[in-house]
Length: 163
Image (cartoon, rainbow, N blue to C red; front, top):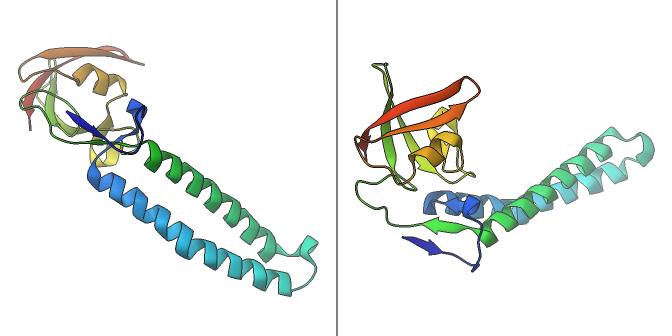
C-alpha cells in the first residue's frame, strides 16, 4: 500500500522513501534560502568589478545561478509529484524491499534494495523499480525465479531472501 503525497495523479516513477523525500525537501530549502542569497551576493560583487563583457567572475556566477535555478525547478517538481512509499507487503518484493538474489549457475549472492528512480544508485545497491531487473523483481516471492534482458542477453536469477 502506498500513500500519495500532494498530487492525485503522481507518476509512479516519482516513488520515494520518506527519508529521500525529506532529503530532497531539505536540499530545496537550502537552495532557496541560502544558495540563492550567496549567488546574488557573488553577482553583486562581480558587477562591482566593472566591465561585464570580460568579467569571468560575473559569467561564472551567472552560470551557477542558472544551474541552481534549474535544480530548484527540478526539486520542486519532484517534491510536488512525489508518492511516498509506506508499508511493504511481507514476503513479496515491492518498494523498499531488500532482496537477495543469485544468478542461475552462480554461487555469489547479491542484495539490492528496490527504490524509486530518484533514489537509484548502484554504488549503494539501490535499484529502480523501473529498471529491467527492478521490474522483473516486483511482486515476486522468495524462491521464485525471474528473467530480464540485458545487453548481454537474457539473465535468469532466483530470489534467495526478501526483507
